[in-house]
Image 1 (cartoon, one colour):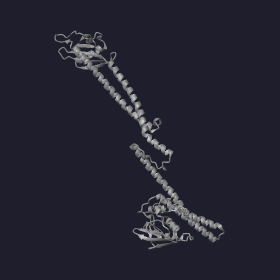
Image 2: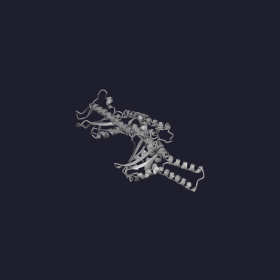
Image 3: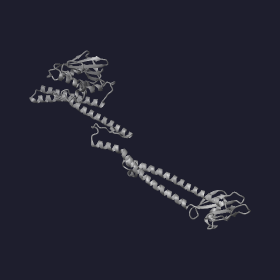
Image 4: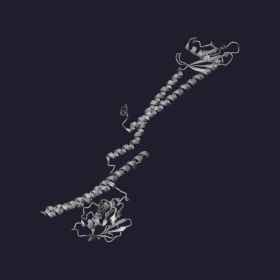
Length: 456
């Protein structure tokens, strides 16, 4: 049964709201119609009782009780008074309508009403048609009671007309309620349909337009604001994914290039077993480096922003930096040296993260330096500071504002195929572990980048 009614229910929100409004209006109008018609029926009955009392008062004025016997005086127009009027002296009828017999239903009802000897009204249902009777005692020694009768047909007709009119009005009101509700709900949901069409016709994620920019009612404005916030989060996630993809390709380029170079060199001519083993070792080392890069970047992407108070590990800074310098291509003419005031300084990061932070900075320094790159490690307050300095031309002043923005390069025609992701990656990784990467604008000549990491 529940499934049956569920299938009959409208599918759209507009139809459901219209049905709810129609049902509520129908219940309310039913109650109002019943109350209205009950009040109308009571009002008409009271009018009939007032008319009967007036007739009884007029009939009582014709009763003479001054003598020993009760007499009914003849008056002008008494034919109107005689119609449906009974006058009793005790239980004896001294006046009755000419057309009424002693055994007629109205006469019997009038006799029972007069026997009560008090003011009372009844509706004689056993008589043909509906007739209202009222008894009016005169309170004298003869116990005279006047009973008047009135046909309720005209009053019933008025009540029936009012009932039919109220039912017709209810039907018209229900139709108008349903139509106006559908119209109002449709207009209220128009912005929602517009949002849906916009989302289907264009990429709401990529577009700069927002749902909350237009004028909407308060509820829809809040919905638009929520959708805009959701779209912004989606755009952030997409940018993060795109940035992660670019960073992976950027970081994997160097070890992949080493593998390609070694394979090309090994294929160029026959090699000895020792040379082959050396090539295999280089390829294995590069492959392991690629694996480490992937693990580091994917772990950072999953964790996003780990708490700086929880160091993910400790690293011998000088040892890692020395290993990076040793892995440099020996054909590079620029000399790189590591200088440390304390050879046992430890940073609160893993070796892989430290390598990924320093590698882009070291690569940039080697590419732009004229002859040397200095890597200086020293202790700061609660941190380890690594300065990477080169003797190159430095960063152009016009490019300083976009130095750490992804995809920005100072000179796209310098022959380097980088994507401009190294410096943003280094800063993001450093910040993810509670550190920072900055550029010293006051250093001359050359460029100096500073990595600050929490101590281990």
